[in-house]
Image 1 (cartoon, rainbow, N blue to C red):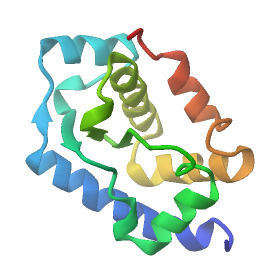
Image 2: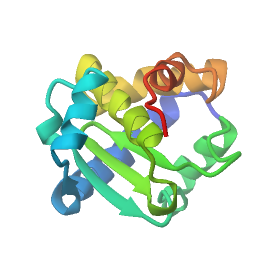
Image 3: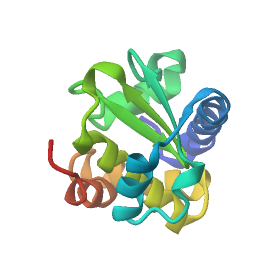
Image 4: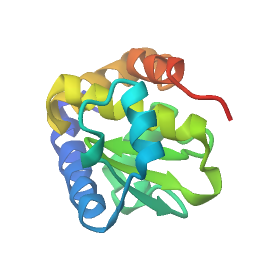
Amino acid sequence: MKDLNSYLHLVVLWAKKHHDLIQEQGAELNEEGMEMARSVGVAEPERIRIMLVDEIPFQEDPVVYSLAKSVGMLSGQVSGITFGHSIYIVKACQSARLYSHEFRHVHQYEVLGSIGAFMDVYLEQVMTFGYHQAPLEKDARQFEAGP
């Protein structure tokens, strides 16, 4: 795996593409979903869109797939991923825990200001600490709701 900067641009392009797709085709949150998002710090839950999928589309991009695999993201099934206010959720994995975790990532994007800024911090963390020990992942786990 090369250094992070050589991949950041490609990952950001991939993330923005999926962000836009989910914003166009995803579902808005209902009131319960908006309340859960607010409870974990999301400032603009009305902007969130969710797209239910059979699997996260990592494999469509070999660079993203390779990077995700190298940092341990693919060691088990990835059940959700967030790009700004756009979220993929694997249909078979839906739970309050997963939604609240992904909503916390929305909050992190809001704080960091953009997909590019988030990916810069997030990728540096997962490359340094590993996926499960990355501070942004640990933060999201602290805000997971019960079943």
